[in-house]
Length: 113
Length: 114
Image 1 (cartoon, helix red, strand yellow):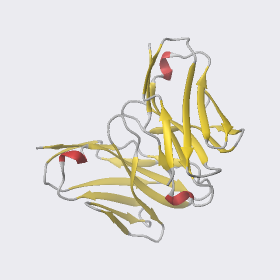
Image 2 (cartoon, chains in turn purple, blue):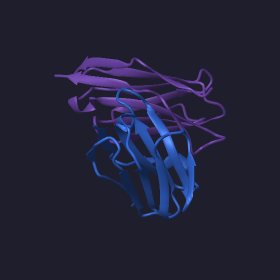
Image 3 (spheres, chains in turn orange, cyan):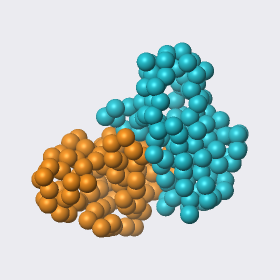
């Protein structure tokens, strides 16, 4: 069964600190993995998209990594800001059904001053 | 550039009343269109997707229906709302060919059934 699991469920950090969010997936055949940021009450916004051949992709202070062998991805946030407080969702697409994305339940990040 | 519009942003409806949520995409043609629901603290669940006018695929049995009367318009409906229909509804679109880099969500509709 295709699944995406994220950890931790929630995380609280102080402003300026770094953090890493984890994503494990069992989607096959793998097509691509995305990280989205979702502010409360808003639609998700894409941060990064990685295909099978990509190991790392950055978007400003956000850096995503992908290990297709172990089926793991991480999202590293550097020098966190209060505006980073949001849910971060890992989403995986399977090659045989590219219309359908498999969503993780997200990590809720709270950055405190 | 392409944009996706979804409305209304919030909606409070009594049980048993009808529902109509609308989503439109601009700046592209023949997009794939999707409706998702997100329950509080849960992941997104795909409800319907459409690859063309009049073509609707349902992912889960439910009290809702979807229609695509025009190429860039996607409507989510219900004849009689249930309390369990409350949630956050998201519309999304992706290009027909280059799906990997073009999956975009609307801003969402918060539906509360009372």
